[in-house]
Amino acid sequence: VVAVFTWIVPAGQYDYVEGTKQPIPGTYKVVESNPQALWEIINAPINGFYEAKDIALFVLVIGGFLGVVMKTGAIDAGIAQVIKKLKGREKIMIPILMMIFAAGGTSFGMSEETIAFYPLLIPVFIGAGYDAMTAVGVVMLGAG
Image (cartoon, rainbow, N blue to C red; front, side):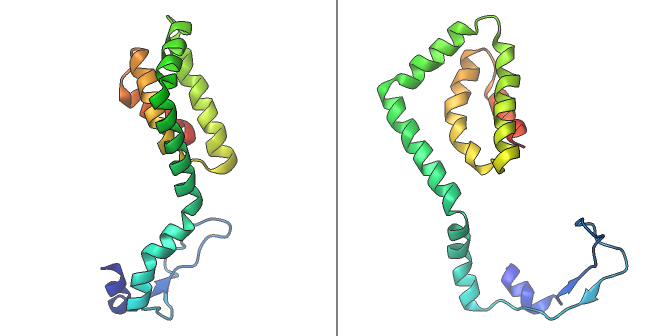
């Protein structure tokens, strides 16, 4: 649908405040359009997957790792150990994990890569007496 609009809607752009992505009102001008043909439409998903190959590989590797470790029972034993050690002090887990994810988000822009940590952390948070949304919030807000 968007590719069809490249044939209908005239192309244009604004001038921007230097150093920002803030457009300057009243500076819109029409530019040469770049209508998308059938070949570009067919290639769009391929190009998108190619650009995301690092993230996809990371998620696959972490998912495979978690699958193997879950089968051995090591995750369940680790979760039980963390909960036992933090008994009565579960609240410190939230800022510590948020700082870890914030370091990843700040240093190398970790956001999509956090998907692999949800199946690992949600049981920990539920075992500590929190709900799944708390775990999701810690990961999302920390990385963001």
